[in-house]
Length: 198
Length: 150
Image (cartoon, rainbow over all chains, first blue to last red; front, side, top):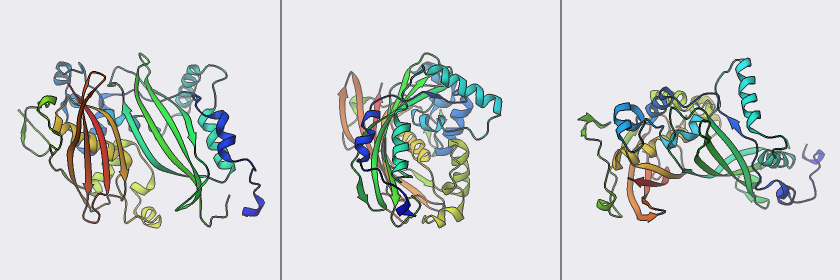
């Protein structure tokens, strides 16, 4: 079917240019960071650090309170498994309230361009996370927003053909609006060798 | 006195940055990946992608078997750092490369050391390098961390 797809003549990088370095809209997690969520994360790698588990110890520590493992940040923002319709709408409304009219589409637009070029498969090529400040119960939910900072030239890669898209995501607390983390991810968006679907 | 995960007594003391030298070793952790590990991984990190819990799906997609996910590594590397440096050490930076999966039935063995000791923006920092090996592959996962000591 490949011959039925009209490939735009301009390089993808050039088309993506106007959408780079603009923050996309905020989204917000459904749930607040809680002691229960922290404990369930700690169970996974059997992390017994008392600043995550023990109020008495944590209050005397330099953090002054129970904190989440900084490395749980990504997991804490993972999509919920099931949400009743009314709460879904409320969470969407809460996120919309964080985004003034005219907020850029940023990264979403770049990914849509990748799709147009047939680069629909995702794989994480690299990621680095900076943990800027501790977060924990009392900070409410987590807000996040992303921007795309770089799109590579189209390249032939081991698995096919594609582009490397670099994006930055910022994580903030709902209460106090504190910046707690920033991740930089390089995603390979590609079309698999020999695939005829796009 | 409490006990740490290896069963030995711990006073939950945090290291003094001045006492650490580049090249200091973090000690080794052994972590068997059982079906129970992988179930707790799914539940604790909220990751339902089938490659981590559906053996047929994993094998069909070229993996030896189901394997631990990205957030498991985040949790494990953070734990190795604060088990060694103490509870008031704070993870500042983490990146890692997954060169090969750690699958059901494997046992992860960690090695780690202090790669760099420095001060920056008023913070006492250490860069750590941690490697995970399993029975099938050496250096299956390699991580670079920065931690801040109080």
